[in-house]
Image (cartoon, rainbow, N blue to C red):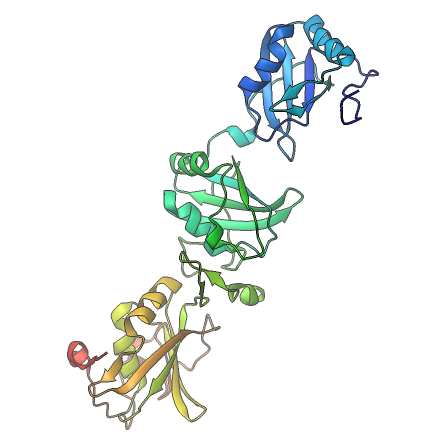
Length: 367
């Protein structure tokens, strides 16, 4: 009997030259297993870190009598088998040889399977996962899900070499504390290789992301998840990002038309749609870009700036909850630049006399 009162052995099992070891320390190494078993004979194969908690292993002796010798010794010993001070429970395996020392998770590939321990699904955002793993190379796709093993993520890199660099650096490590919610005290990463090579991401959402396809549609059911608070590298909560900007325009001394807004905002990337409307006695507009990155650059560059000299038509920008605007293709208050008939866009809006033109873009902006 062990000091914990739990039997170390099952006497009813058929002897095998392969022994099953349980309750090992986390990430027990092959060297530690060999050190424990070699006094009883020659070890020909091992299989480490088996099971959901990776605290089990198999050891194969060259001869059946050597395995019986080890089991018999610890069955009669007052001192239990131990590794790093933990009592190890030993029994005969129902297998007679270890066929393959490498599990599928040990074969290098470009997609990693990451188990995030110590957290619930909503504790770690997909933005945090991307921030951590993109430090090692371009992350193509991420898919998160919940399994019996806990909260997991599939992370696709360009090649196996990049994925291996990330795995070697992060396996067994913790996500930096400042990227986690206050109530999460610890968070460990267990990383193996996935058999996948190209993840099939159908929608952009808070559970999945394809960074190679900014035109991928957003899953409507995931909108609430997309608006969850995002924690930045400095530990402060950031405004949830979107590809659509909401512009509030102050001190409207001059006309701000769709054409004016298009000229201003297209300086940072392709503008897909614009809608102008009145709310709470002020003028606001929605400007849609094809992706979040372009919208973020425009927001950072234009926030607090004025369209006209003298502090007129000052822009205040935030991210909208919208991702795809439903606007009329061509009117004095809206425009869809993705339509296939460019002749509609060539006509000037009747009655619009903007005081500001694209040629004065550089001189008209003031802080």
